[in-house]
Image (cartoon, one colour):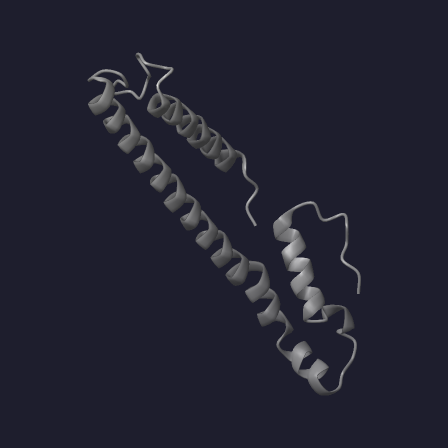
Length: 129
């Protein structure tokens, strides 16, 4: 029972591995556990292809949103701290740096902002399970 290398899509790969686990390729056997598996095959396939994968995608999406929200909050806190430390307007209301680019807190802000932008871009381009 080999995993098919042609499955580039992670979702298809998971489905294939689960079908292999449930030994759907042995569907022609009609005794013992195979008889039960054949009887419940359509239910198991529906569960694998729709319910399970859908729930996993939903949870991964939720975790990604939580992570991005946390990163945004950290960025906002850094902007407030930079403005308090270096003077109001160092980082404007749109999040643009207006001075003190060499200060450690501003450099940290810039790096976190780049990281968040990359995360948001990756999320938009991501292939889901």
